[in-house]
Length: 211
Image (cartoon, rainbow, N blue to C red; front, top):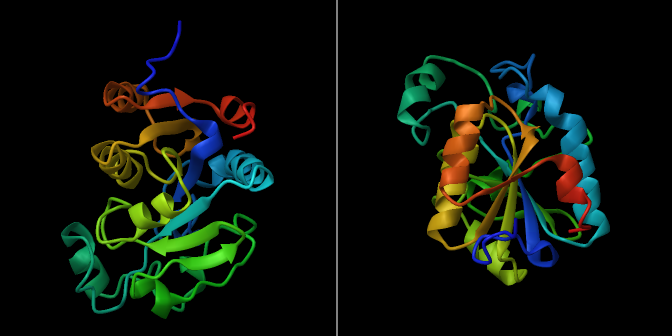
């Protein structure tokens, strides 16, 4: 069956967005989320395909300063009481090993909202809340690269990927979720995401059109 022309991904103008794939959020990390380490092989295939095609990649990251003042309310007490995960300067806030061309993050620049260039058309970008577009320059960055399709993968579908997908739809992007490259997923979650107009596909399907 033909895809709805208003929803069909444009792979030649797509960007890959990875969400919170940081060491503290890996399955055995300080604030580990089950299944996150396990999606790394597929994320590796996705990043390799997008790099090979010269398409943009944006790695969205969290940073929780010790004062906890600019942290989601649900985690603010935890951070202010000494919870140490994705803290600036700590090894745990780094992207999963091998995911990006550069391991080190420039915390000060990221906290100022500046995209950090990691490689050709590849960036790290800090988000202060669940959604990747909220109080960030993501829309500006994507527009600058002529992107009209965003492909999401990464950590914890019910929270940050879901919020980011909703924000992308609100900005009229064509939206894709790679179902075997996102953690904490469920069939119910996939149905809800698809109901928003999101295209669901596997890693193999995402890399086969040579995005």
